[in-house]
Length: 309
Image 1 (cartoon, rainbow, N blue to C red):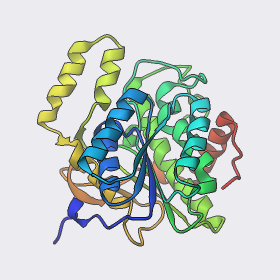
Image 2: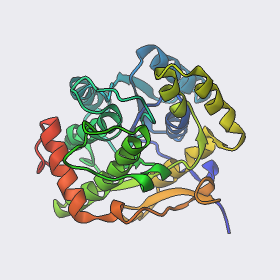
Image 3: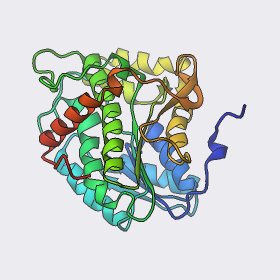
Image 4: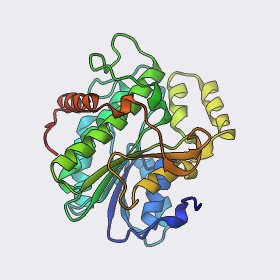
């Protein structure tokens, strides 16, 4: 049986794409492959200098590609609003693919600019707000897709609607699991609402398995534990490279007739590595009542209209 590889990427000429967190790791690989495949690709990055280097790297690796930069800090809702406005201009009012890739993992108990717990605020609320604000340009001239990155860590996640900011107690891994579970609930509810509204929009999710990226190094550094960051780097001995971790995302992005709400990840060794294939989500990730409740609460927290899909 043929395993899907980057050689199977279709021609994306004429399409437009946005990748959040595109300056490193899976986001950088995703942006490069999309640009190389012909898509006008916007790299949405928090750090402008690293973002510029990433855009230059795409242009060098894919001469003639159309790669652009927009500053986006998902931990600041005012930055999200400004980025959405800038993105709409960069894509000339037409967006075919949004890849919600950026994220943080296992951080000390920190707060976003708006006071939310950092992992929930960045991984979920930031992407919720960005997607919501980009709805006017998603799928206006043809089918569109939103692909959101979750994680194997969603399986330990629980949504506590009464304590989303972990004010009563904080565990960095429980907070991470909650944010990644929220990514899947968001995907399922976005797809349901898009279908109900008759929109030409499909929401999908993917996870990279165990991939060697910078994601796991930020938490130890912020906590002042450089030894743990070095240990995280050493873990690359048993993880797959970012280029392999990006495969489920790139598989989901152009996959013909993929059912809305589909979830993809690596096929082998407990979904930790290998070619992309359908992934297993937890029972909690498939709870439609929680998906709707989380959507409504996310809209309230971000000051957006829950029904504007």
